[in-house]
Image (cartoon, rainbow, N blue to C red):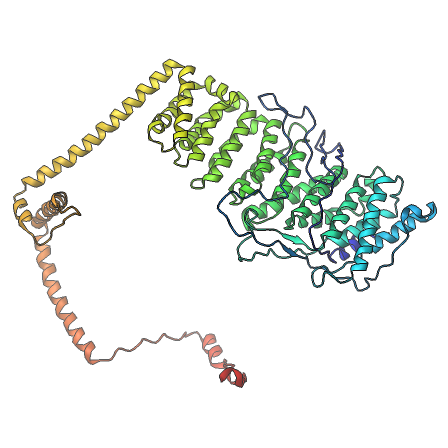
Length: 633
């Protein structure tokens, strides 16, 4: 039988791709695998759509009593652009690097259903080996059409054969099937191609689609049916599906083709559920991908799909949580909020964070503190995403944990309510429509209302958007109904603070007025005002304000200079004498400079003996380099 080392050696012979193929449809199938550090493990819910299935009922519910939703599926199609009209780019197709098989002339084999029972296994192996032949879909898509169709039909037949028949996956099939999968799929991905030369933006650019997708889709489909078959034995397959195999599979998640990432998501999740010994290794390698994405490249196409897998994995973690899992939350998931492309994978990331908090409420405080630390300062759409996630966290927060973070949390919400960007202010004010959050606010109104009242009251009159006015009035009304006495106290305190600010402003203006009056009393005031050599006139032709300002500045300078005159008189005389001498010296140097030409100073050569010897022994290569006549003409 073929060992995995041979499989991995041949895995670099790559596949390649054309035309959009139809996405497959299939029935949902769930699986469970106990052991290790997870219990009630939730399998991926879709065979061919690739969407991670919903958690089992009862695995977690938020405080409003509803069952936790499944991980948000990664969209295969782009969100419809609602902005100004733009030119839609053509869909781009490319192929990964692979070695096209030399002998590509495939012989059509008889159907498996017509073969004798004793010959079916051998015929099955022959068809699997036929499918190891790789074709070129880019250089000439019309080349080898006959043999491409033979391979496609063989793959389609094997998918149906494994799905409908029982007892067909024998021990001899494992190395052949896994080798075929590796030969077709493990390849060097093409570089990210963008016609503008900029970094690939999934919201703006069309993805590069694999040209060999008609074959790759069926290979993925066959391998998934192979893993899900009742005849599949993980104890036999683990000799071939090992850490090297998983690592190569994870590298494919950077593919730009969303259809391939969708199949990869389901395939990896099946492997995670079937092979308990690979679970820790898979989580570790996903961590490494995220670390590289956060701190090095900030570019990876498969982050959303990997987070979708992790959302289902986290749902099956055993309690109490291991320290490894807590570190993963604090050191990997939370720093993912810093990346500028957060919008691509934020729904999946928020789902993972909420799953952790449902498992262990004691993690709520460090999570919220980290979110506030990473809170965006000038990126309003990202700020709206943070507000969305924060509301999901507050839906599952325990009252005791809420008390620990409410001060810093509502200080940030107060800033959001005061945001000039109406979507940020609107999203923050929607918190007052959440019943559970309002119950938490009501229990701690004596702390929260004094924090929120100034921003609510100020923006109720000063914000430019009328919708925000209505939402603020709603929040103030709820606070008033919550605790009328406290509301009146906050109102009085706010008025006192405003009066105090006005008083400080008046004191500041009076102080400046005193300085101006003193300037008018200066004996030199009349002389300064009579000097018309410098006059500042504003656009309206009036110069009173600028004259007063100039007078005040000159008065201060005159007072300072008169005070210094008595102290520095002798020093001034000596400096004046020295300046006269220096002036004479400068005049002499100028006259000498006119007579003597200016020469550039040469840099001194190093005096190290070894360096001098190296320089003397060095010979320029110019005389040994022949110059062609074409370049000199």
